[in-house]
Length: 311
Image (cartoon, rainbow, N blue to C red):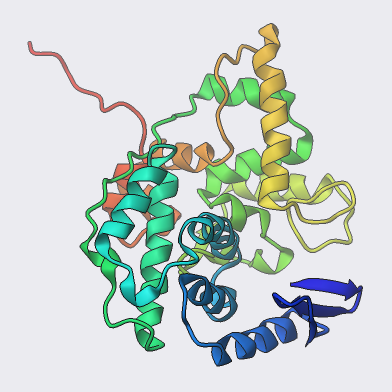
């Protein structure tokens, strides 16, 4: 998709011809979906095009971004294959090659490929999903736990707004995308109410003195005429990537500064795990919005299990 001007989207086909798709992003996706639907699904590339036009726009913003990234690798390797001729051995070949670089990325791409085939059955392009026959390894959860000393050392080098974001991350346990998307509309009389972006589950994180104080600090650190709670100096929301870059640069600076006391960097997302690790399993599971407490235990509770010696 390309834009010839600032107010219209166009699709350029393989002959170089421009097809006008409309002014808004919504019009663009609808028009493109219509074009793709009319095209026969001859190759995996055709299948990928239709999936990206019809299915991905209905997903959460973070998932859309991840799918676009993952699709680059699927398309590069598989676009010329015929969907009905794709076999489990082809999936294994792709998976085994991709996991040499990153098991996590390989698993994400295989999950996307499997869903593409699920939709392909619906569209009549194939009769079965060959990815269901592929046995995959389980990715090991991240184990980085942020201690109180590390948190305090990093906190000292952050801007006041980033400090507020750190405090909110630990107090609420929200995912970075949900936390950075908080607006005044989420602030109710009873607490912070939000529908999580990943599952859509509604959470009400009740006010505590610390939580209310942190939100007040955040709202006082930037222009008052703004909707988002965590914002830049212009009162605009951060993107997750933009915020992570700011956090990363500050962490690098802290590690290089001997007097900071910070030896090893951690990521902003590790604060969600700290929120889970520093509380009881039951309370942490509710706050993180997990229907299954086992997910909280396996992925987010990272403190060492205490045990008493034999007497």
